[in-house]
Length: 125
Length: 125
DNA sequence: TTATCTGCAAACATTTTGCAGCGAG
DNA sequence: CTCGCTGCAAAATGTTTGCAGATAA
Image (tube, rainbow over all chains, first blue to last red; front, side):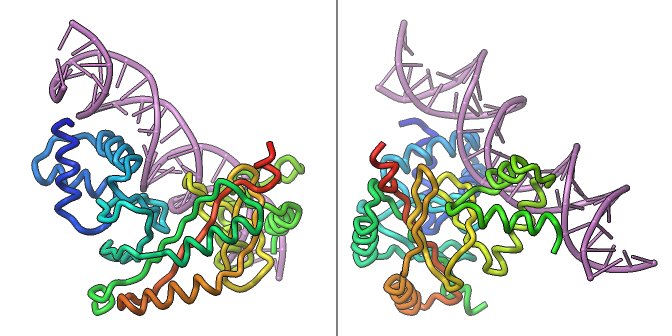
């Protein structure tokens, strides 16, 4: 537990939307935190591995992070404009994925399921 | 319709798995085709826009392409090792996605649904 | 003290772009 | 002939890594 690690945890707590590593880095620097971009990446990577944050890959290839509420596996409906996100209960999809994998004899299956759209607020604009 | 464009279409026809732009470029050069990597990227981008190829983003961030059989929207179960892929009928998921988007008042929704695993052949190894 | 973490800058990988020249129509 | 396509190399982007110095325990 270092100063920087705590700082990253704090920004994550202060925002409710998905942010890229670079955005988080800027937020940290804006708050006066002295922290390197590499550290942000390293910290986020380790937090993601520990399941402390959600990481999703946006359509443009950026990876975005958010502290996750649910500690169980789940998916998101993310606003493409502001990053606001809803965590989804995807039991139906899980079952579907598992069944299909079995049907085609694929093993060691993981899945990517993300929805991107415009949230009500951004739609209005 | 240029020589290069035709060449790209041909390699795509000759392979049945998802390949990265770079892999396709190598295949083309191996066949003796003189073609630049940039052209491959440009051609694939335009083909993807026309719906002539499927483009999926692998977990490692690479985009991989394959000529698609079905001209309708669909998803894939892709072998993480060899790239072999099964096209999936995902009507159930479509409905799920649409319903959730409506429920949360998100508009202009698109979705990413891909399964990655090991195909029977690669599992055996 | 010691193992770990950090910052910086350079390295990387993939994809995009500027521009002069080639080629299809 | 003319406009679009191509090739090359350079640039842009997002992310990772090597290494020396700082820091937590």
